[in-house]
Image 1 (spheres, rainbow, N blue to C red):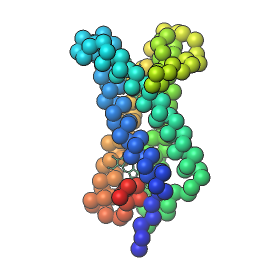
Image 2 (image 1 turned 90 degrees about the horizontal axis):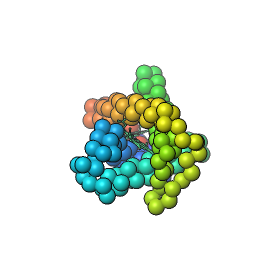
Image 3 (image 1 turned 135 degrees about the vertical axis):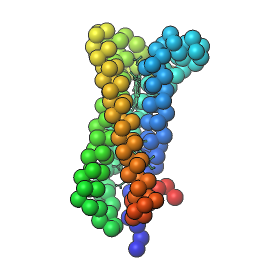
Length: 183
Ligand code: HEM
Ligand code: HEM
């Protein structure tokens, strides 16, 4: 029986976003732990500015791609599971997938707001996007604290999600991996 899959655009977006999220978590951890000065001492001013710029730019790209993904999900039905999932698997995957959507839309918004409230430029490639909110250092700190917490939530979701994917792929061998695979 042919395994049902997500449409190609959805599968492509899945892997593009997955790669970008892993990169952003890694670079974000550097920015968050070393701070601007610490990073500058380590890799120099130019590289530090580039890392901040790229982190913001790709974070905003994720925001746009997640919204697009949500629209695609509304327009095209997700394929049915063959064989059907158990009740637990259905509930667990629905929870983890939904939390991914919420977290990956919230995360860039928090980064954007934290940056703007801190009086820093919201960089998108060579452009500076509108900050949208007035400068407020305290608020900026709160936004970045939340940005850090949601970062841990995303990491936790990834660990559960990848463990589940490997379980379906190598142990249960039920075609769930093929639903999202590009090949
Ligand atoms: C690292 C960041 C990742 C994120 C944010 C992510 C997010 C998601 C989301 C939200 C879905 C639900 C489908 C949708 O509505 O779009 C999904 C499905 C899926 N993901 Fe990931 N994913 C990531 C990484 C991975 C990795 C590394 C693997 C494989 C090892 C993987 C394998 C799958 C599979 C097989 C599905 C289909 C599950 C199903 O249809 O129930 N994902 N992913
Ligand atoms: C899905 C998208 C994003 C992910 C996964 C992500 C991830 C992270 C992580 C894990 C940290 C470290 C937090 C900490 O240790 O306190 C961080 C820091 C940071 N992020 Fe993001 N980020 C994203 C989007 C953005 C966006 C869109 C912006 C700005 C427009 C941004 C700006 C920053 C800044 C300035 C820091 C350093 C904060 C500090 O010095 O405390 N991020 N990011």
